[in-house]
Length: 181
Image 1 (cartoon, helix red, strand yellow):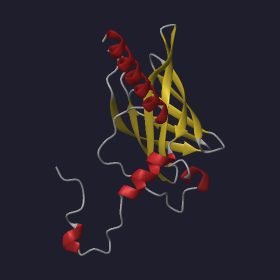
Image 2 (cartoon, one colour):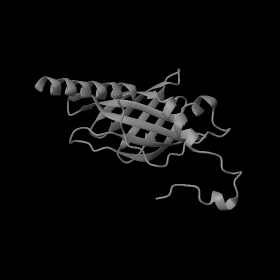
Image 3 (cartoon, one colour):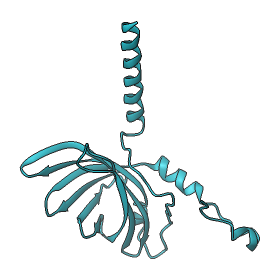
Image 4 (tube, one colour):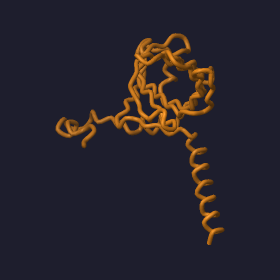
């Protein structure tokens, strides 16, 4: 009986590990409504490619200590208009220190660098030339964190497909569009 329980426990651990590998190990909350918009014609082509979902895991230095791969992060670049960026910053939990959450942020894009700022600090994202990875740095008064973000084209495409064009439907039906609770 004890051997069966141990084998069952090992199978569960293996399944969890494989699930984490398949999803990239990033598990962060996102709002119910995400509006990924195609950039306008005034946005350079290379900047337009940054639209989408980027995932990674922060490593942090604080108080003379280095913590490696401690906090999952998802950054959704929803909109780029000219040089302005609208994004969702989402983070996972880290023990009892940090509780998961998300917030919308705004910022700017210059060359291949997106900078998102709020009262907490600044997140700088430098997109690699392959448009699939990015180096990100978060700086606040108390710490600096680093990660390599990977663009998740599968999730980005799934979100884009959720938004359907309803302009051809009668007005009475279009009025019922949206999130209902």
